[in-house]
Length: 492
Image (tube, rainbow, N blue to C red; front, side):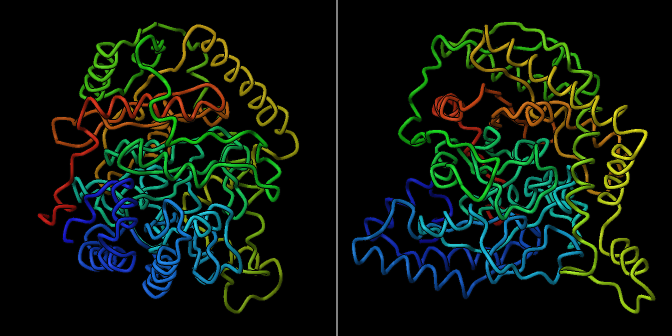
C-alpha cells in the first residue's frame, strides 16, 4: 500500500476493480503525501480532504453496487482555473482570492460523472499569464527535480503535483504552451488538444480564441484515460466543436510509427537560444523514432519569425477584453474606502492584479485602441492566418511535425527574466495555439544538470489519437517517462 502513487492510471483502475484497495484508501494515501511533501513543492493552492473522502466513499459504494466506470475512485488535481462548485477558484490571483464558484466547469463536471475524486486545486501563473508559475499571488511553485528551479507555467502546479506523485494526473490549460512547456520542464506527458475539442465552459478565460484544456500525466496512456473524460462537444461553449470523439485508450496502438512521416522544420533547430543539451536530446529522440520505422523529412515553416509578435498582440488584446469584468463591483477583490466609482475601478484593479497581468492588459488595451486597432490587432489576425496556412501546407507532405517544447530546460526561481526573454521562451509552442492545432510533449532525456527535456509533436486537426499513439509507442521503447524526482521518492 505504500507504493500506490507509483501505479499507472490503468493499474489504479484495475486495483480498484479487483478490490486490492479502496478509493478511500487510495485517496487517503495521496492526502498523506500532500501533507508530507507539498510544503517543499507548493503545488496546491487548496486541498479538499473532506470533499475528496466523501467522493471516495461514494465511488466505493458505486463499485460495490456494480455501477462503477473505469475511472471511478481515481484521484485527480484540477488547475485552479477550472471553476469548482463550493470550492475556492482563484486563477492564481488576489482578484479571486475570495471567490467560491457556484458551479462546476464542464471539465470538472465530466470528471465527477466519471467518478474521479478531486484532491484539490493546484497553483498556476496568475490568470494563466506566465511561463514559470512565479506570478501566482500565492507564491511560486517549485520544480520537484530541482527545488530552486521553476516547474514552468502557467500549469506549473499541475505539472509539479504529478511529478511529485501528489496526484496521478491533473488538468491543465494551454494558451501558448502552458501544458507542453511545464510538462517539458517537469518530465511529463502533456497534451494540448485541437481548439474546440475540450469545453472551455467554466474555465476562466485568458485569451478565448487560444485557450484549451488538456491532460497532464506521466505517460501517453495516462493522458489518454483523462482525454476520454475531458473531450467532447458542450452546448454551453459556443466554440466547442460537435466532432466525433475517439476512444483514446483503445486507439493507443492505432498509429504505427513504422512509415510515419515526421516533419523537421529547419528553422526550429537554428533558433537563437536553443540550448545544446535540449537540441541533442530532441535529436536523439528523433533518431529513436527513426530506428522504430519513422521517416524524418526536412520542411520549411517560413513564418517562424512572426510567431512571438503575433501571439503577443492577439493574446493580450483578448485578455484586456476578458479581464474587464473584474472591476470590484460584482465579485472578486474590492478595494477599501473608495471615494467614487472611478477610484473603485482603478484601485480594485491595481491592487487585485499582479504586474504581469497588468502589463498584458495595458499591451492589449493599446493594441485595441482607436487609431491602433487596424495597425496592430487586425494585422496580427491576418498574419495568424498565414501561420495556420504554413502548417497546413506542411501537413500535405508529413504526418506530424517535431520540435523542442522549449528552447531551454527549467529556469532558476528568481532568474528575473525580462518580459521579452520570457516571451521568447514560447517560440516553439505559441504557433500551435494560433493555428488551433493539437500538440503533445513527451519527456526524452535530461540536460547536464539533470533537468528534464521535452520533445513536442504537432499534429493536424483532430489528430489527438495519432499523437498519443506515437508517444505511447515511443514510451514502450524508452523509460524517460518512468524517471522520478528525488522529492517524489521522499529523498529531498
